[in-house]
Length: 467
Image (cartoon, rainbow, N blue to C red; front, side, top):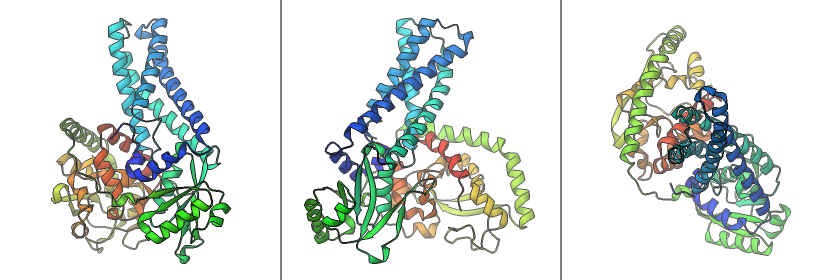
């Protein structure tokens, strides 16, 4: 991933590039600079305080007071410089906050390694134990700080402090555009309406993508006119080119010009062809090693839970405890995927998965298992065997894969996983192949620390419920 590219821009590069291109010309530039400076200070203080706390709370390390101050300041500065080099303070944001968590895991590790080198060269005599403790403490503190800061920025953004109002024309895939802007407060762009020429959509609302779907933007019938733009007091019109005829795009551009608006043309990122890139060998080795160790430990630790779930399934509806189904793995190879049975034994083995908890195929205990994702636990066996990974695209059934187009088949280039970006999103309620951008973005940008970030977010997503 390019240094200046945030995770959201990896998914929606066009909209973020267009929005950033206009940001300096609109009124929120000063406010955005203040927020960026605030974030830099918060990152510096968090890391400096974390290192100082480690030195202070562990007197057995015998670190001199001058060394404590020096190490804390250097750690904070290194972290900020590495975050800046990685484009953290220039990026748009992250729909699922995975990128922010990935930074919070990777950057402290890099800064501590550099601090260790400085300690050796400058003879600061910082014990190795202090670095090991800080390696755990700093990422945790930085993750919490990033989440809190993002929440504050979103509140200010939603209250329209230092932002410009935006209207989106063409509701074909407006939900992703709306979500990108809502989850990228640094852009200083607040979507206030979606204009669609389909009269049947008038009065609808387009909800954000995310864990909670409580933010929405109203849909207004078209066409785009200068008077309509002025009524929304907006400063930017985003036109979804892929869903409109050239004539409508031209008319919208003229209306925006008459109203004195900036205009950004958006090409649907779902149409973007992404070249396949092979993952580095060290990443593949580290990923497989982590899969084997983690799946082995989890299978042993969760064995009492396995037994309890098995008893509950049998008491609720006698029959097989496990549900075994052929799924398509890497390079199209079939494998047996294991799940706890959550549906009646009379349910078809191969059919579209339930999208609602009231589906009559689901048993009583099955509803609980699916809502908490506990039915997926036996796939740890697949991870141990190597047919699956902890993180990766979700494996689909053969009859669905046979309908794939060439672009959708790209998701078969890597080992499938138990959890991933699609599984963490609100789009989990919709078919995987209709939301291919999650898997393709993961394939192009995957790193060991991104996998860790996805695993950290997964329990919170599971606790928020599913189908």
